[in-house]
Length: 141
Image (tube, rainbow, N blue to C red; front, side, top):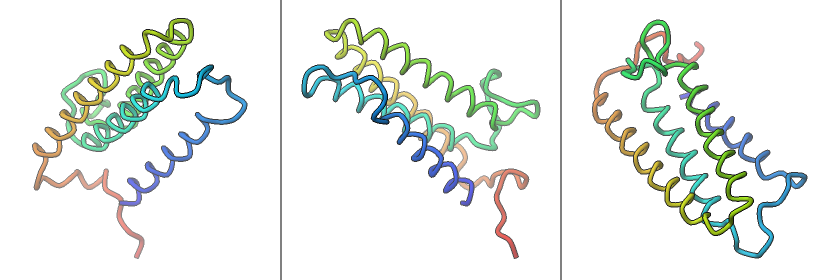
């Protein structure tokens, strides 16, 4: 539980820096970019839930699993890099072509749905199966 709290706090504090005042503004007209920004937030949330559902479990994807075959920090780092790459590439592509923003938002919402479905599948598959002892956070006594 402590890990989950720490991870959620890290995500919240990191998200705050993404909307800092000194960053160049994506909006040149009022209301432009709202759906795309919402879709990026949904994609980040779905990625986080998917990572949580896999944490400490055996991972089928060889790119995301660690040396012991489990999803750990390496998998989270790769998922974060993929999310950042997708958001960054879309940001720069949509900066020059704002009419394509709708397609980026649709793509992000669709990918969010896929990742959320994978997370639901992971949670159902692992119901009642405890996480390995070395991946759980024990409370100090």
